[in-house]
Amino acid sequence: MSDSRQAGDLGRIEQVHARRVWDSRGRPTVEAEVTVATGRAPGRVVGRAIVPAGASKGRREALELRDGGGPFGGLDVQRAVGHVNGEIARALAGMPAGDQAAIDARLIELDGTPNKQRLGANATLAASMAAAQAAAAAAGRPLYEHLAHGIGGPGEVPRLPPLLPLPQIQIFGGGAHAGRRVDIQDFMVMCPGAASFAQALEWTAEVYRHAGVLMRERGAAAGVADEGGWWPAFDSNEQALTALVQAIERAGFTPGEQVAIALDIAASDFGEHGRYRLGLDGRELTSDGLIELLLRWCERYPIASIEDPLAEDDLEAFARFTQAVGARVQVVGDDLLVSDAALVRAAAGRGAANTVLLKPNQRGTLTETWQCWQAARAAGYAGIVSARSGETEDTTIVDLAIGWGVGQLKVGSFARSERMAKWNAALRIEQRLGAASRFAGASVLGRNPPAQ
Ligand code: 2PG
Ligand code: MG
Image (tube, rainbow, N blue to C red; front, side, top):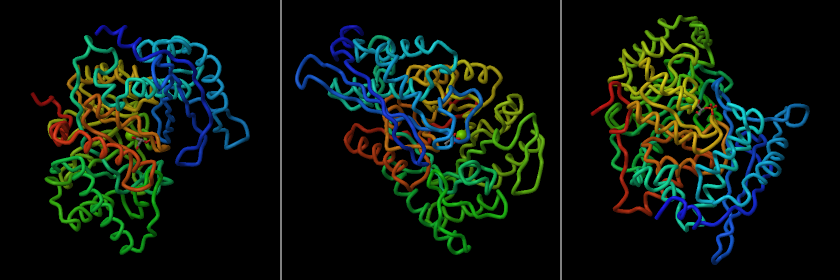
């Protein structure tokens, strides 16, 4: 079956409609619905998607359009909603629902700026994801299955077998997600020893529970940060690492083997121009000072993955850090790479990072996110599909992770339903696949040089 026949077979976009809804921080965000006329029973299907919002954003991310002014702290999205209901709805009407590449190309062309400055990436991504949801509904398939050819269709990309991701799950929040109570943003666990996605969740549930008990024993209130991780009541950044190892042990697991640590340093949030200020530790470090500190942590603690160890403007130091630990620790670029194919190629050329974080709203369309993943694979990088700190019940990214076989998924902690909706969605897919399900396990972790 040719691309065009398959795309045409799914029907045509009849209507695109957006509304303002609310995210997990109680802030406005954009929801879009795409209606497709299928030309056969039941006649019409609707796909829906909601966009998330970050707090610790990379400077080169696509623009999230906010209204400014008085209401909701200037964060309203009526202009972005208006763009979907006006220009975008008109531009997409009549397009073949199955041709995601053409739909996204139209959105990019319509916006006409390098960073979605005109329409807003929140407007374009809502339409892009809702169109994919509608196409999957028209095909009568789950989204991960519909996306199994990536974006481009049969003939361009061989069908990818679905892959259940190794999850990165936050235990303690920090940084911009916890009022800067500690400097490091995410203290997470991964379960390289788990045999299935379901088992990785079971193990994490025990670690999360024990971490909560530990915090109460230390006299800390059992509150949570933005992504559901325990509120970080620690006297130093390193104390959070000690507590995490303790929680893993109390839960009955071998640190490093069964359950390992993953960190998002989010260094752009506390450093630039090669100076880093660790407020909690009362220290200011140079790039090399920070590298030294992180290398020491890698020796002392069972750390398997580190994201944004250096700031987004510190590429050379990022490369030095990757050279030093990249063979045994996954080094992830988030703010550094902002899900951008060209930035991945440039970083790979310098040997900075060995893994890319993929956040569709950093670019504003599914096609550009897919292109970034393709560039990453070509460079020998691993990938992690990631949610944002401001999330909703939308689970589209789970299907991207599984359908595109990315191998890893990071959606925050093991609490709060905007997080659990995603873990639970993946669980359902694992069960539905049954014997056909494959779990990524530890083999997908980024390594530099890449494992052959
Ligand atoms: C990150 C994300 C998710 P934010 O830095 O990786 O944890 O945070 O959405 O605030 O950018
Ligand atoms: Mg990050």
